[in-house]
Length: 277
Length: 277
Image (cartoon, rainbow over all chains, first blue to last red):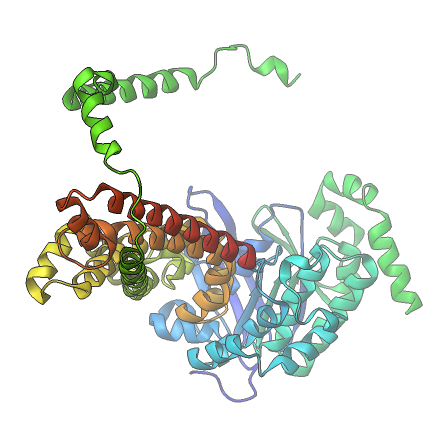
């Protein structure tokens, strides 16, 4: 593989990237962003703005129609298939609704994060007897779920499933973490806690962390750099201090009034908790 | 306001449905004509008398200890032929399905389309499966009886080949119609195809795969009976002897054994579905 040891090394960037849907409409237009190794960035924006597409594009899960890409310092789309897949081993893309096989037990769902490092034989042996259960237990403990280790995934609540998917990230050793609304099903206290765990893990690893969030207050509270996306374009890319109310009003347009009024408890509670804890 | 948009209350799907119904009837009618299907002839005098005579010769069922012992041995052999045949079929179907199924394709991740070479392999395997199952097991049995002689091996091979083709096709369809996101996520994060199968696609589809395989095992029991008539071992061979000797009672005993076998297969299937649900 191309990775140098200990490397979150390698910038992840896209320049002039355009991504189109199968139907032909643009999902992203002229997106230029650079993420330094170890940087932690929140992506915010209204529903349907292209946050998910942006993360998928950074994860080499969608190929841009135009523009240039760099993932962990490597241009993915010049690589032959096998090396492209080797590059994917070094990143972790977590979709918003974590798809876990309902009958799979939590221990295996979490250890699936180790698969890129495992041979097929090690993976099969782990299904026969999970000798690495300790890895899974520790990862789950970070999210207070260690008692669910041997439960089936369909016995979990939505919020627990979401945290199991995050525990899979902890079990992985990826250098580029791309998380789509990772705390959307969690109550404010848990959301804040889970985000802290993820950020701690990323900085311990020196991994680049890009997180899309719908809770603007959470993004402002936890991230020093915010990227605002609207209608497939980057509206702003600013340090937290420079994100003004006007930026946010422009970003969410008329929706802001509605979204601020509809779930006011959630962000407010998050901020309060942030102060209390 | 929203209602005002629809002025025309005629169902836009109506013409399509009428066309489909007409096409269906037009296609079905010649088939009825061709087969001269007419249930009324069953109640004709000659038919009824022949039927009564044939069925009358079945009573009472044969129950001498020697014959029962013979039937028991033949039954055991039939179950063994069906079981080993199904095992051979799985050994053909599973690798074929793994190679041909779209959901384990890595090349489709970024583009939505498989690369050329895998697409050719996949098509080739589908053709192979069509070939395997398009030749009825009884024909395979006759071929193998000539090749390896009278006996159980011919039956096992005939079932293995035909059912391998059937299982492979249905395995592919089950895997592709189930939830695919779990496997896609693992592939996107760099897991291998086999790893994605064991950690996502298999746990998602296991009950359906098991239940269809058990159903095929039940079919294999019946098929091995039919193949017994051409000398491929088991209950069928015994039944053919009894029919030749016009021993209706023996035939009835064996038919009752079939009913018991299928009933038992149903119980096994229900049990496994309950365990795996």
